[in-house]
Picture (cartoon, rainbow, N blue to C red):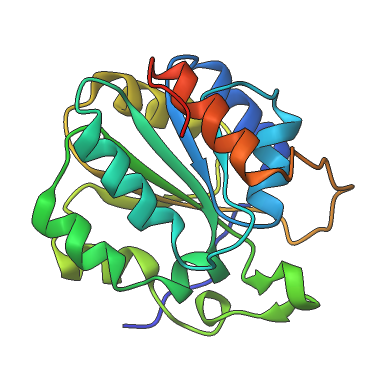
Length: 198
């Protein structure tokens, strides 16, 4: 089923900042590119895991973390292009249904990292329909900044798997670059969980 064009689009940085401000204890996994910049711009913290590569891997990484840390809220913040690359991960997430996992797809309808070519989501692909088709019942879309409060409540409640497609403005904001040192990011994140580096 083709998805109709959204009537409203949120400012990506404002949405992410408000969401993370309301979920200070969440473990956050970012997709590559703009979603990582948005999360870093909202305030760097040791519970942020910036995924600099592995396009398509953010949701899978979030699933593994949610299963390993069931008493903590896990939030994946990624883009439409990155999620499209790893679309099959939604099938495994639906099978496992971790109550503490929320996937937030910032959807500008473009591949921002490769020149702003239009992505499938702006050409009729229905990401919410795909998520629901796999079996993620709590899947919805929004373009409202105010909806971030509702999503934050679901994150903090840890009452079920959530898939939120957030329609955002298709603009290229100044890059706010998080650390690029993979071992540093990994070890800082592990330390925040009380685990030893390796």
